[in-house]
Amino acid sequence: MAKVLLKDLDRALASATPDKYTAIMRGVTDLFLSTPTRLTPEQISLFDDVITRLMDRLEAQALAELSTRLTESSNAPDQAIRRLASNNSIAVAGPVLAQSSCLQDEHLVEIAETKSQAHLNKIAGRKHLSPMVTDVLVDRGDHDVIRKIAANSGASFSKLGMSVLAMRADGDDGLIETISKRTDVPSLVFAQLLSYATEQTRTRLLAAQPQNTAIVELVLSQAANQAKHLATIAKDWAAAQRLIESFSQDTELTKRKVVEFADAEKLTELIAALSVLSGVPVDIVGRLVCNQNGFGVMVLCKSINLDWLATHAVLANGPNNAERWQQFETLQDDFDRISVLTARRLLGFWRGRMKAQAAFDRALIGGAQ
Image 1 (tube, rainbow, N blue to C red):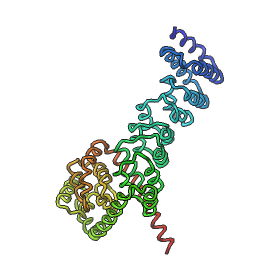
Image 2 (spheres, rainbow, N blue to C red; image 1 turned 90 degrees about the vertical axis):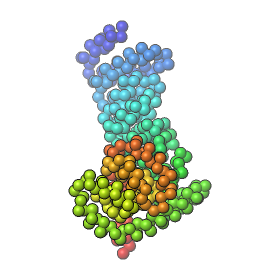
Image 3 (cartoon, rainbow, N blue to C red; image 1 turned 45 degrees about the vertical axis):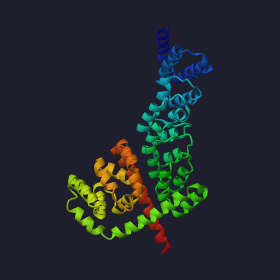
Image 4 (cartoon, rainbow, N blue to C red; image 1 turned 90 degrees about the horizontal axis):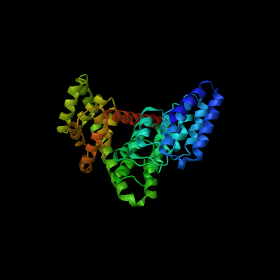
């Protein structure tokens, strides 16, 4: 019976005009939405076949209308919903991505991995988001997507996803404050955020969350220690850079030297070697290596394809690493989970933010003179 109806529909559509297609779509959608709870799975499947056949002939405006209307249904036809959500036009995909409860996590992940930032932005505003989805959003999302997902109380994050989100906030006090206001931020990530924040922002966060005073004091102490350590080793960077340049064309040799420098606790040479391999300026690499939180330097090591043993040796360097030693198990888990591509993309986002902040600081200094 269903096959006969579909054949009749195909014959009717063959000679119809675009306006007729739209009228048929509205009639079919009205019928579906008027009796959703009384439909059997077989009947829903028939509606799905009818609607998807119509979609092949509908113009963009009619598809956008269909998308908006089907978001009302809690049992919308599967194929139709997935096709609408995957449409390249955000006017068509947007309503379904933002509101439909019929999209499964695997569908959202597929779209988030392949479609535009506008698609990611719509997903980021959904009422509920699982860690499976937010992992992709914090990996691929631009600044607007990151801000939106950070402010979404219905979004849940994996441990790795939360750490990536925090790293994306470095240099952005507004985003740091948004993330810090979440109720699901672990103390270690909160400390990570504070280490990225300006003094003014740390003061505001302390006033808003007095229960975290001990963490703030620890971060301030670590930041001062990091700055002092960096100032000491920076004097030797020029000499170390000249040394590294003598073998910088041989990537595998440089990687072996990273382990040698790490094992020998030659921190300045280690930083210079990591800078050569990653293309990240030595001052930024130095900041990562000397930061008490090892997540940033772990990401850097992953991005240049070091294995865990080499990464562990790098992480063992830096000032007063008692806290970092406690992170090793978590860092190894993150290292195993994060891909080289994701690490490189994250480092690119982070490096771009640091360059922008440095340019802004130089402009402020120049304007004050």
